[in-house]
Structures are given as C-alpha cells and as structure tokens.
Length: 189
Image (cartoon, rainbow, N blue to C red; front, side, top):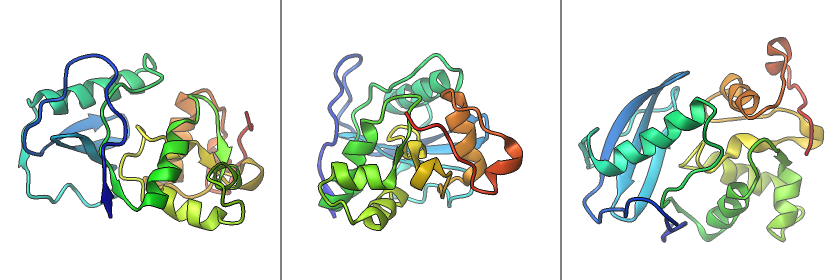
C-alpha cells in the first residue's frame, strides 16, 4: 500500500501536523466518521460501514476534524460544490490513479467505469477500476458516487444505492425513487 499526499490544500487554514484523530458528524442520511492524520484527511466512514476503529483518539473539536465537517455540512446544504482539504488516502498505485480521475469528475456530472478505465489508460480494465472505486476511503470528497455503469445505469455504492441516488440528486440528477433499486439510469454529461 502506498501512502502519499494526494492533494495539497490550496488555501485556507494550514493543516496542523499532529497525530491522527477522528470525529463524528450527523449527515442528512446518518452518522459519518472522519479520520484525519498529520498530512490530510485519511478516511470517511459512511453509515452501513463499520465505525472508525483505529489507534487514534476521538476529538471532534480538532481544527482538522471541524474543517472537514464544516465543508461536508456546506456540501449537504447545497452551498459547496468542491472541497478544499488536503487528502491522504491509502491505496495501491492503481487505486490512487483511479481516485485522481474520480476526483476530477465535475460536480453534477457522471462518468462510467469504462470512461475511467479509458482515462487511466487501461481501457479493458473497467472491473478493476470499479474495484478501486469500491475501495475509495474518501467517499463524497473523492466523488465515487458520480461513477455509474454502462449507459448511465446506477450501480454499487458503499453506502447503498439509495445514498448514491441521494448524492446525485443533491448535485442535480433527477432520479425516481421507485427505480433506484432497479438500476435506474442517469443523464450522461
């Protein structure tokens, strides 16, 4: 596993180089756990996933934790379209390359797994791209919910298809609740 700084913060409060801590927030769909380390945000745990179980102290008042939670709240309120946070996910070199492309999918747009495989110069590896997307430790921030199946079909998401649909709707994709569980299609941008 590689562990390298993924994205440097471009503005705002510098990221303190302090030991890892975690905090929890209530999102519109349930509790989220955020884990921050000395170089950036390391993990977001969605509802339906095991809680943060790490060798770190809980500190909801840590400036790094509050910065992440504030930006997530703004996103859920519809007032933030991108994040300004240093990111430090752990993954293989392939995972990191996929997540960089996912990070580049604009707010309100979707891409298919095949699009990502092509962008990563491995056009026949859409299943491997899907697996890397499934290992994304920073859902919402690295917007893996914007990746859909062939023809725009709504497919797997760690937080469940209903949450994926909810996040897509937040970003402007109209979806019918009845067809979310049947593999609805979204407009391709």
